[in-house]
Image (tube, rainbow, N blue to C red; front, side, top):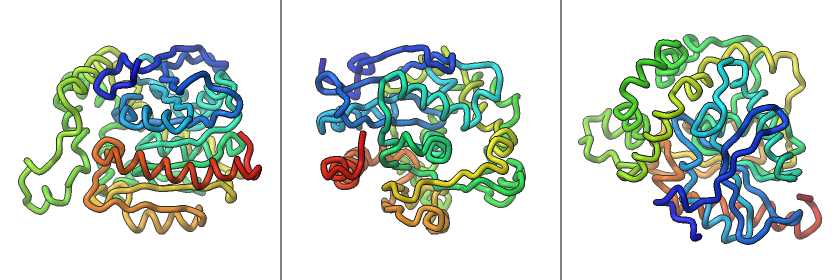
Length: 327
């Protein structure tokens, strides 16, 4: 069946229990049967999204001859949603992702993340550097492990655009958001889209719709079934993440190719953030997308799909062919 971004059922869905004990739902797509020589792309979504956020990229990347694996992240869709918040720390979610690669008999993958998926991807580079061929991060810069704990409230004070996280951290936000999930999901998907024009008095009609009725139906079906507790639990792990990284010799691998794609209208990643990231990842290739917001792989789907494909061909495929990297 041909993969159709408008039809979620046209993709190859799998649901498997990992060695960590978690059951994950994921898309596993490849033109033909994957082998040990097939390049694998592991795509991670953010908040509040599903595997479906990568629907425009999966088919074209498979057409390059690659295997594309896209899980519903922990707490989302048909993937497990544990009660304990500890399960949502980045160390634990990265352990799940490594176990997913083990299940697929994939030693190394190109890891591609957006939003919380990008934040998790950066940490996957810290916790499992031996499982990565290259990495692409969308919308979220790198934040190194901190020497002291910075609370969500303090982070919001330093960066006011992150103020919403103080609400998400509160457990009461789960029930309140669930009670009006349709309204809030529409609002979440507009966050960052032409935000500056709106703040400067531009018409709200300029904010693009990032999903149609079919997309909305699929998201609503999933979020009404699985709820918002899991997705919001990621925002409740600040102290856990600090403790698990404290005193650890965690360093991003300096020899791997890295790309960061960011939109100029997205407050989560600015020129300052990019400059700071380059201090830690000097080999970073940053791609600035003018007049683009947060949901790059949907709003700028063709550009993002092609840019990442070109990066992988140049930095990974060529390296493997030359014998400089192994899958």
